[in-house]
Amino acid sequence: MEGSDIRIDKEGIWYYRGAHMFRKEILTLFFDHLQVDDQDRYYIHLNNETYYLDVEDAPFVVTAVYESETPNGEKQLDLLLSDDRLEPLDPASLLIGEDNVLYCRVKNGKFPARFTRKSYYQLAQHIDSEDGNTFHISLSGNKYYIK
Image (cartoon, rainbow, N blue to C red; front, side):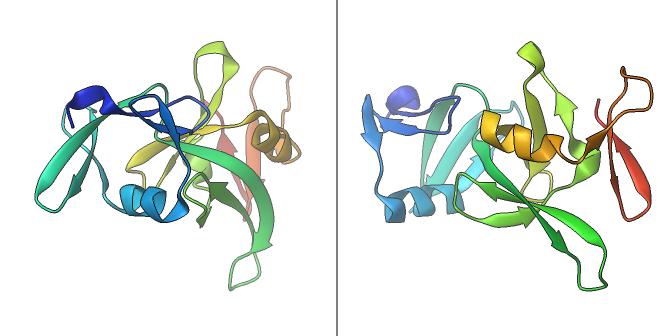
């Protein structure tokens, strides 16, 4: 495989040489071995081989947002990611990109994740503004401003 044989589109759909990759066990294996180099190029390192990917936007997509509680009873927002794993939102990592697309950092801040329209609307239920120009999420008594 050379550079662009594997591609992730902006909706988080994986392709190999143009064919949609849909087998869950293969995608799970690829997500588990996904890395990023010093030049922000994404690759899979598996069985002592490295396969670079073409990533149209972000390697992870937020497909849903859920409200939950931490073990000490504080409100938390959880993200369902395109790898079918759930992780807590790091609200300090929220940012607005081109075309007003919302992103955050996932996997301990290692990767960016793009919010789908559906997940953005789910998160928007938790977004507040004092002046109509700056927006934030309030969790555990803290305000996290969206950059």
